[in-house]
Length: 331
Image 1 (cartoon, rainbow, N blue to C red):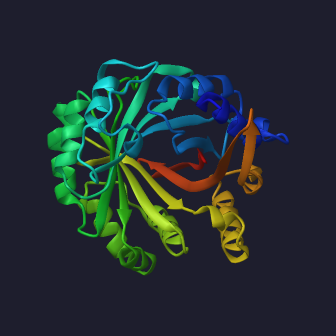
Image 2 (image 1 turned 90 degrees about the vertical axis):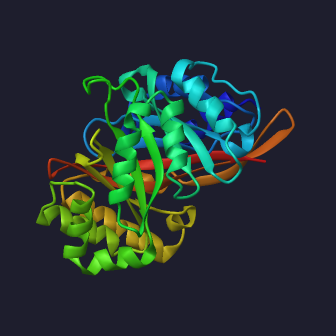
């Protein structure tokens, strides 16, 4: 069973029973093409579908190369060359244990399949790895920005990925980078109880748009049993720009375990009351599945579930909420 067929089956099951119109909009054809242009190696990658929870429905796709699948091999993308091919070649030749995934992330909702973002997920805090990636991706000009940002991060933060946007229109060649930061459990508990600690650490990395409402909503996230993450756009000077994302991550069991499901319902009800989602989030609970499918004597397990909810702010003002579906396949 080829991987494009597997992707189409996974999407069809997630979008059935009217969910395509409610959650996914008209992005299916572009999402299919984006996946087709990005697969490399031999396995089906564990990938993401990004959905807004407010406004017109659409989705973007984030397709990774898995390090264990491409390590030490001559690999290429069927539909992307240039800096994308350079970054992939670099990724495939990294030492074992340093990198995890290399994503091509598409604004498939706009139909732009020629200029995806390229994002690296790492396995540790070694700053040299993201710096080498930026050089491989043609953005050595942003290395100093990453060094500065990393030096300003609180010690309990861990930068799990860095990404650049070679074709993002309207951003002067996207002269900024994106960094995702994980927190340890102790610090998340601190933020849940101490607004000033949260405010201080956001300001420490240069985020200048902290206000009481933003802090209060992040604290609401921090008080849950789910893991909190921050996402920053970082300027050439190494300072957080005025756009911030705060995400919670769920595992697959959260959508079947009774107590976790009740917590998710309370959380999403609150997000809707804040005006950052409409009632389409109820459909997320109908999406999760894990099942085996067969084709011409071959059987595989496929799965799909909502793994993230993210809030976003720009210039201190809330934008909307998004959900991220994790999809994959395995023998």
